[in-house]
Length: 181
Image (cartoon, rainbow, N blue to C red):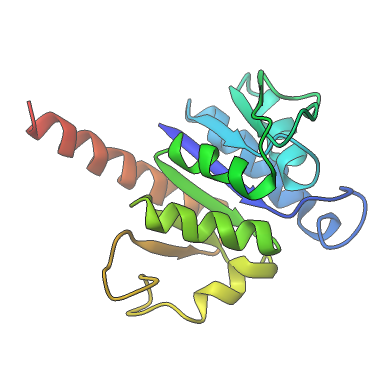
């Protein structure tokens, strides 16, 4: 399964990223242990930390980069889109099966909305701040961004809960595709 991880950019030794550093590294480790391919914005902040964690377990990490920027040292593939930050986000969203949101500012909000608009489930890693926590407050029936109910938006509070949910989403996806044969 291809999993997008979105959230804060910035120096990993400064807040708000510093406060969730361990969570991000452990998230990367657990995604890699399960054999899932990680897509992210390829730069600093949570992107760097999740990528670093994944490398400890030989995880595959693909960075979808804005402009002609170079990505972080932990990426397996650097996709230089030549696009600005918000347009690059749509390349990321279109490339994954599910999106995990960790904290984040306006770019993260754009990615959450883009994933939802493209029928991709979104998992909000709660208590990580930013738009991840803010957007949870406006959900309809605690899991939709609008009345069209295009995709589920889930809230989790731990990595174990995250991994269990991802396995369920993967099983549901596999069942859907096998029933179409």
